[in-house]
Length: 229
Image: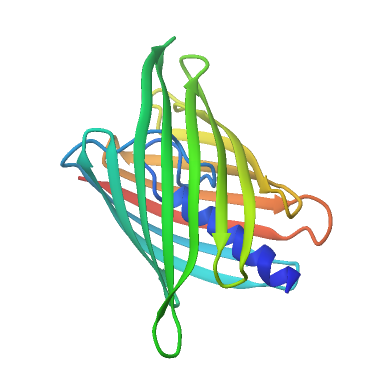
């Protein structure tokens, strides 16, 4: 039961990171505070592999997210083999800060899983996400949230802290980032990630590799893409 709970928590954190705009979010597990602009949309695809700790599994997802009003974003995600996630973001604060804008956003997720007879609610999450540009090139993202696992009848307090670079090289195509994340039930994770800009503002590919500290030292790798239109 403990191993199953740990596995589900890891992928729940992946879900929170998927409802994202073109900055942060994928391929990080930390959520950013940016919101998709009104009448703009994004399609994201992802494959995540978890190894170690007795819970090896592969999961694939496809998501469509759109800006539905100023400061409001809505996304629908299909997760193989049998889960649907409705997610949204509501921007609470946006104010000029140094070379950019400091933002605070409320992120929510509602997941349902297909069972033998019906669709049952599997999890409900609420996260407060903050993004702060500390220099012209570096932005810090911080998360604090609550996750309710309906299948296990458990509650957990999740957190994440990440740093993201605006882009290396003359064209800024390579965007490295790193993070630490976890919850109040299990050991934390560390994660390194990289996003490659194929077409500025429109097409991206990304990858990440993370490891849980101590214990079974479970590993999580992801590969994904994003198309904005």
